[in-house]
Length: 119
Image (cartoon, rainbow, N blue to C red; front, side, top):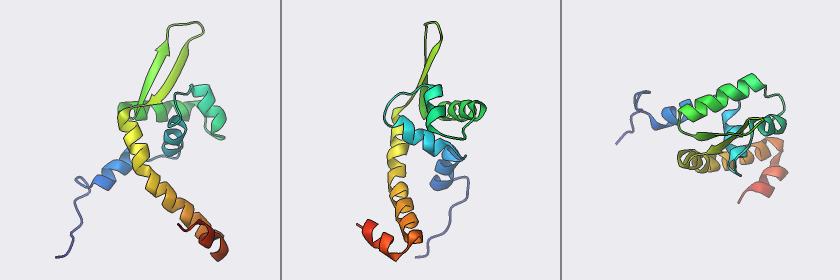
């Protein structure tokens, strides 16, 4: 029995990619896996990430239910972002893709490198 491609509107992979599309979201997911972080800390950890783009990505991730934004009532204002359970599920689901990416990078580096990273 031949497998038919699903309509793009009902394809789970397309739906998942729509949530993580953009240059920085997967990096932010990876950084937030280790615990809550402040926006300034995220900017320091990701060279080339502007405050405007960081804010936009975090707002989109919050709207998609991936991150929680917590604002502390102190002066100066303190804001932290952390992964939700849904965000942790996505980070976990991306782990095999990350493994594949590492194998691909090793393969591109040459046959000796690929042999060292193959499980």
